[in-house]
Image (cartoon, rainbow, N blue to C red; front, side, top):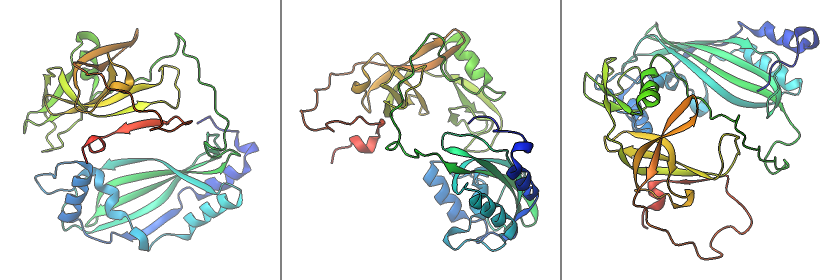
Length: 345
């Protein structure tokens, strides 16, 4: 995304749109169902999240209880529809959801009734994006359980005017950027929750796994609290360094200056039972296989960044596919392989 296309003086539409800031987007919304154990269980099973032992809903389920389904919700206000309609009239008729932010104030427990109110929090100046120029509209929803604030949900959309070429089919292929010594690998987000993890990798070339001191559950990537019991207390154990490929992807496109496609990225299940993404090295990208044993290694991406990687071991050669079994004149954007895909029929 580029910066603002201009100031209020040359963007009178933005000045008009800002008048909608603070306008209610929904008032008196009522959750169609109370917080309930079946929905909590279904959500946890779908995401591979353990059901909390105390029966409380995982905090990240916050939006679930406000969703209206196909029949929608009562309480949506004309002001929000007017804002979106004004953007439609101005030619910004396409829409895409971009991101959301949530803040949690209290746990949600079965039986609680959910109410919510939403407001238009902000409308950005006109922005240029690869999809087209447009405006980011952010709504803020306050969710209450039995009248007590349980959390805040911010949801952001981009209302934009599509560029002339809106699909890969319409666009001319872009030349691959040349890799140079100045091209750096994207930096991980390092914060107070995971700084010791990255420090151990950089300084000691060790991979540390978080361990909950409340229930003993291991977790990776690092999190501020335990998914299993909710305890904020933890220590660490060093990874043994062995594992197997659980799933992998072969990246062909899009090109990025810091990488030389094609290359393989695997989800590796470590011997301790946790999983971690990383590049697979020591074997051609097309020889990576599910179940293949790997050992932990470390890749010095540049002078300031070391990341964990996995080196393939004991990989048997795979015979090439017979001619005519694959696409004749196309190359995939990426090849994703999962355990189910390689399972015998």
